[in-house]
Amino acid sequence: MTQEALRPDQQKPANEQDKPSAQAAKPNAADEIQDAFRKLEKTRSILHSAGDIEVGQTPHEVLAETRTYKLLHYQQMVNKTAKTPILVVYALINRSYVLDLQQDKSWVKSLLSQGFDVYLIDWKTPTVADKYVSFDDYVNCYIDDCVDIVLKKNKVDKLTLHGYCMGASMSAMYTTLHQEKVRNLAVIAPVVDTEKDTTVIGNLAKNMDVNKMVDVIGNLPCEQLYACYSALKPFKQGVNKYFNLVQNIDNEQFVGNFLRIEKWLYDTPPIAGETFRQWISDIYQKNMLVKNELKLGNDVIDLSKIKVPLLNIVADEDHLVSPQCSAPLNDMVSSTDKRLMRFHTGHVGLIASLYSQNNVLPKVGQWLKARSQ
Amino acid sequence: MNKMFNFWTDVMKLPTIGPMYAFSKDIGAYANDFINLGKIMAELKADMDSYWSLVNAAYIKAAKETAERAPKQLLSKDDFENYRRAAIEAFEDSFTALFASPEFSTVYGKLFSTQLDMSKAMQGIAEKNFKTLNLPTRSEVDEILKDVAELKRSVRELRKNAEMAKDDTRSATT
Image 1 (cartoon, chains in turn yellow, brown):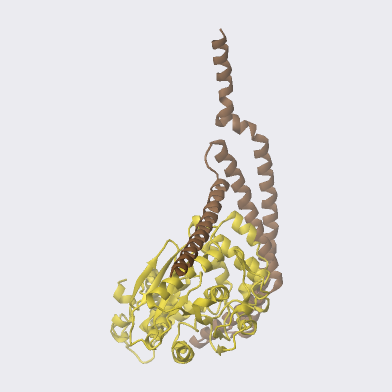
Image 2 (cartoon, chains in turn green, blue):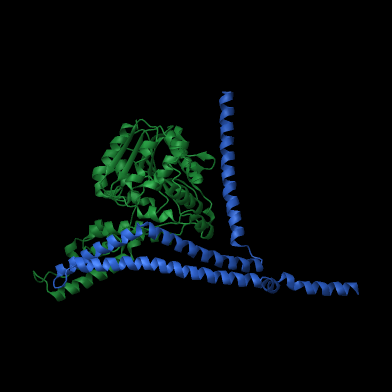
């Protein structure tokens, strides 16, 4: 299958494609069976080349690159109207291009079109040599380095830190330790109070012998992550989505959307062993973040030290980080300017859907703009 | 004469540094490793049984509910579609309830832990072989990785302190 075939914008209209001609108004059973086989065959061939679909197409430059991360700087689309730059801290799970999955559903592009200067930390795949890389390294070294680069480039002394999921938790950790560099903290679905987490992931994490896992295996392998994912809505999403794909295989837009999400779902790098040990043991099992007991190196993460304006964005239907787990951040910080925004969508729908473009991003942009001058 | 005896003494010692001597010396430890591996495999079998019994129960529940909710006869395209919907709903409910249950979390955690025990036991045997052949073992490489990570943190601290000292000096002079 060619690249063009995977891009809905370059495909022929559905009626010109390899559909059988509509001979009769009401197809008979033989025609239906034949059509079902045609759809299955087309699905098989499309799925085989799913990885070729293009994602993350908003123009950007790589501002800095190390063995651990790439710092992306997106090209301005309109005149910059917000003085404070935004640094997006992506999670360590899957890839950052979910924030720029496709042009009409891009979180990054929407922020650019609202006049923000946007930077993003794109984490690279950890290798065996990164087994002992911990949250201390991610927060106090890699994020701090990126913050310094952005501040220097924009000639400002503060920025907006904007984290998603695990990246949101890391952004909150960073803000407690380096508040002098943060103007606003805007987090999407942060993992905070894991005792209140009602998700399957939270349930599985509670009995995982993570110390033994890291000692024996090292980094968390992607297969283990797939096993966890397969337990999330296993039939409605895991099985039914393929039925829907077969049924909609002649709808280019549907197929394009499906393949981009599918590519992201299966683009899962391992997680550095020591970081994963802290994530599961300290945050999920001992709930240390909410108890203000989590330690990064010699520093204790005390969320009550956060005084900067806080925006916490959560999704009611989030089955990866439940809203009950994210919302307590607002009660823990000392900020006087804080807001919790709840939206009726899911974990990915919150950032990569038409719903988020129409309902979430305008409100987020408005909040950020008012605090970015 | 002494020279000749010394030569033969050295020759006699040679096998003690070779792999065969090391293998024969460790034979008892190898036997223990394999007995231990057998015990872990027996435990793994018991944990697997617990895991599959939970999955099986969830499957039976879902199949029963599908039979109750789905159309009894599949005569039209709509019947097939309704059957699919009913099956997806029933399986989703049953398996999500299973995965979210504390019982599943415990059984899954135990199974995962036993699988790790097995990997650990096999790694132990491999490590012994590597030592016998005088090759670096995984735990030795691990120690190096740990040292490297700590060194990197120390360098980071030193660099930061140096930069702070430089800033202090600069502000004192101006």
